[in-house]
Length: 454
Ligand code: ADP
Image (cartoon, rainbow, N blue to C red):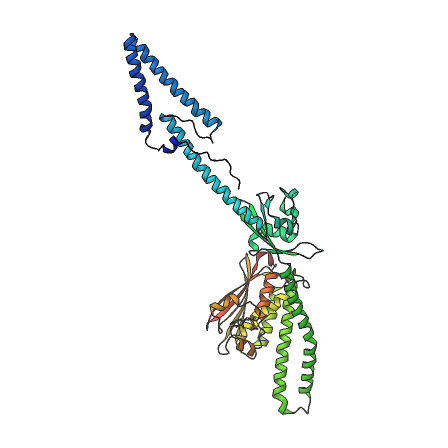
């Protein structure tokens, strides 16, 4: 361990030296002066030069004081970390107090250095990469894992971190930390396909601490899961189409035996449900992979809202709720119309499904307050217990599984909504009370709003 200065031991006298009032030390000086005066007085009286001897004694006393001052100054200037010269009187007290406070400071300093040393050793031993940058984004310190994972070398010291991790996603993250509270996943090298999860933390004025760890295995597993779901959904599509085709063909026949009507209807309902499930899985998988659909179309909200309202009315025919449309915004949305229609449609069908048939009222709204756009669906249906709200957008999470199945739900609707909103920089807010109703609100940021002329 590095120690800034060795701390010399105090001499025996110094150890016994205790701080007390200045008077205690001044008394030593006065005693000395008194002693000089008495000797000088006696000698002067004896030889007949009383005042001259007294003056000489005063002079000697001043010389001794000046010598002490000189020693104090020399010690402070040249060897402040050595044991101070052994002096009596107020100069000795002064030296002692300076030395004591210095010793205390050195102990604290040594403790601090020890602490930093231990922190540094543990950071060096970490398997996660740690990089420290200063206010100018220049690399100050990193651990060996950062060399291994991010390739930071000795010659990178003082270089700008953004010049080393140059991906646009990282640069964007670096400047907008608050938008990614969990950090970001970066693909490091094209050839090797390595992925790291990076988390930046701001400290001091503008310094940053970067933490990174290898998530390649997790990424590959996640990709395998996505591919599996994607493949199986594709594979299921054809048999399902054949099945529903034949089922329809059979039921449409004139000589169809009425005895088979109910089983066939059930088979049709189940194939329809499976079809919906497969379609939702494929849509989710496409959203996750985020490659196919452009996200910069200007979506005519008035047109979309009317379209959604018409669809809702058709779906509502068997429920008979009162449907209302409430548009008081002149903004359009910038995004993908297919995805947005699908997400909004899910929220609307949920409101219709989860509202009991008697006196159900559902309002579909589009508003803005210049800073955000709000798509809302409000119902007076069965509502949701607050304990379910945090998990509601998870795949296959249902409050009441039986009810969801009964209504033909796949359990994927809100997961799709969440993904679509995420890709549009928006988020979902849910306010709900059991037996009183729910309000699902998709909140879009200003950048996604497009001011129309009318
Ligand atoms: P599902 O296909 O089951 O409707 P979703 O992902 O769309 O799946 O919804 C998840 C769960 O959230 C539903 O099973 C339901 O319990 C609850 N839920 C969604 N919307 C509403 C609503 N408007 N009112 C009450 N519960 C709702």
